[in-house]
Amino acid sequence: MADVSPNFYKELFIQLETPAIVSDHMGQIKDINTAYASASGYSKLDAAGKNISIFVEGAFPFCDSAKKEVYMKLKNGSEKLKNLSVSTIVDVNQDRPFYVWVLSDFQVTGFDPLTQLPNRFLLNQELKKALDCAKENCSILAVFYLDLDRFKFVNDTLGHSSGDVLLQEAARRVKFAIGENSMIARMGGDEFVCILKDLHDEKEAELIAKKIISGFNEVFHLFETEVYVSTSVGISLYPFDGDDEELLLTNADSAMYSAKKKGRNQFERAKANMAAGGFEKLLLENSLRKALDEDEFILYFQPQVHIKTSEITSMEALIRWNHPDLGIIAPGEFIPIAEETGLILPISDWVLKSVCKKMKEWQCAGYPPVRVAVNLSAGQFLQNGFVKKVKRILMETDLDPSFLELEITENMVMHDVKMAIEVLHKLQDLGVCIALDDFGTGYSSLNYLKDFPINSLKIDRSFIFDIDKNPSSAALTKAIAVLAHDLKLKVIAEGVENYKQLSMVKQFSCDTVQGFYFSKPLNDHDILLFLSKHDAEKVINA
Image (cartoon, rainbow, N blue to C red; front, side, top):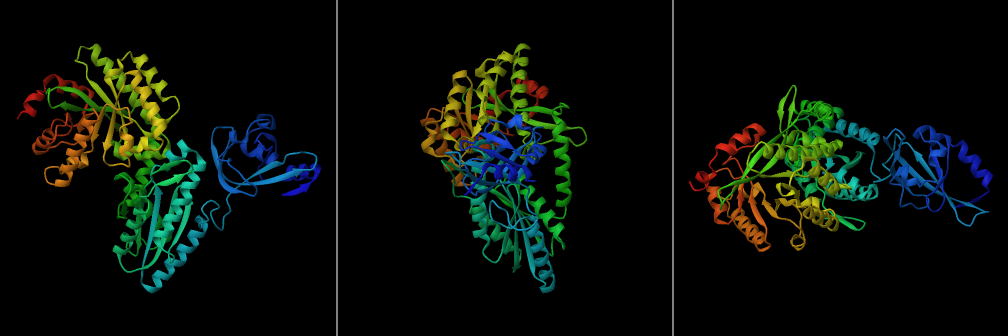
């Protein structure tokens, strides 16, 4: 902290070629320099008197001489990732200090300022050295490409400050898992790359990958919030998967994307066709941005059969992408891309509104009314004004709320339990039904379960898949059904594919079943034919 005259400070500030802002102790902007105005598009008049957090996301909390990553907001609506340095200036004529916020570009050498890990530039240098050494010694070299699962969701809901803490702790856990003789670097965002030298064989690389993944099983403490975040890992090995730096990185990146497609929280080895898969991902991402405007999404519906009444009174809505060149694309292929790019919100909103419109059309056409369940995305459920959005859609479509069921997951509500409970109560007040999906696969607490205002609980298909062969799956399914009924909840068993599975879920008193044994997901035309012709009672009592 330095005592300087106001004139000296003003002259220095004006001549500074790096974007900079001056604020008072409350964060109210007093001045911006020419470099900031040029880089952001905002004028001094735009910024004067407003809080710096409006223009620099992630600026608070701050301290003297602090350095961190922030997002500088541009007037055109986009953002730029910058390094922020904060300095305190004491004006001898003022009682309180001023703060100077300097927003600089990333350096091309050195270390990442947030995690203190080597950055991309230093990684490329070290990877070249390690690869040359591996070639000389005929040894095995591994490149790990890591990405945090659902990091964008944490960043968007809890803020960039929480995201920064998560990145720092994630870096520490990975560094511990790989050991001192290996290197970890931050590529940018939530992506990390590890270099592991002198491995004995491929199995050693896989064991280290498992150690990294298990290191994420513990909760992350982000200020006042506890969250669980997993990681997906892609592995490429020299000499098997490439003999230059770029190819090893590309193949590891493609393998990581493959791990995400398979459900996240796992590792995947590079394969010969993975580079093509990375190119395919790029093409899908570009096409996905136009899919909504081109009306390329379609709905499929899978019946849910009530065991006691033998009626098909509900179904689950599922999205498909009818790509003009590739045909029907399953959600597992494009939903991860939608989540990464932020397109998941408009897509999720389209599904919700389209389902409500479709149900009303069926009812007006004289078909017996059935309840339809819609899967909510995490960002959709936690966005401001979501309850009002649901209410507006119900009014616009003139649909009775009791025919709409919203499915949430355990992980979704555990990010902010108090807020989730409040939103669920408001939704139930509208008359909407709530189902807890994928039960038993997330990180929920049974202590919270009793507080969630939900109507039904869906047992995940991973328990049903081997329920007739695995005593543990049978025991867990039975226990979940008993627990749900004690809490006055209906129980839905997903993934019923054969008669043995059906017999066991009937034995465990599940209320409703869903799966290929009754029907695969059907388009809106075929589902109406199914409802008209199918005799569920014959199937259940067979």
